[in-house]
Amino acid sequence: MTERLLLILRHAEAGPHLYSGSGDIERPLTPMGHQQAARIGAQLAKLELPGPVHVLCSPARRTQETAEGVLSALPDAAVPQLESNLYGAGLDTLYGFIHATPEDIRTLLLIGHNPAIGTLAHDLAGPALQSDTFAALRHGYAPATLTVFQTQEDWMNIRPSTVKASQVLIP
Image (cartoon, rainbow, N blue to C red; front, side, top):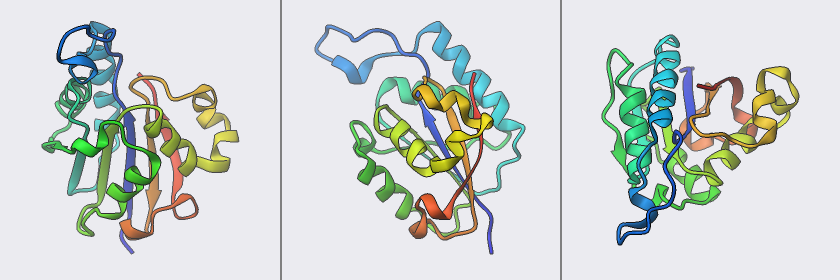
């Protein structure tokens, strides 16, 4: 069986809503958000992710900037694939992306938005949320939070009972 990692990442801290024609999708990261993304990237680089790595990212500016900051720390940085349906996605849509992942991918990184990205992480973590390792997740899913799940299942079979929450990275 092949070990796979599923990484669930909320974008880093973004600026306030813009009152321009561009709207919410063009909100950039704050200076703190850029620092958060770089710190998550540095922590992620220490995990020695099994490859190939596939990155799915919302097209929002803040998620793309988060991806850039995180992936620049990795030795073999993957190019994020922008998926318009990740912007405003619900839980079913997120599971759909996971289930549609090609079987040769060994690490999948989803970069998206709350509430769905946090709901997905909480759904998959299940009882693990009661352990001290995941205490930070009990009060929401803060910006730049990344949860790591391990599995030996095919992507099509990912659900709470087929993954193990192994750690949470917080900037």
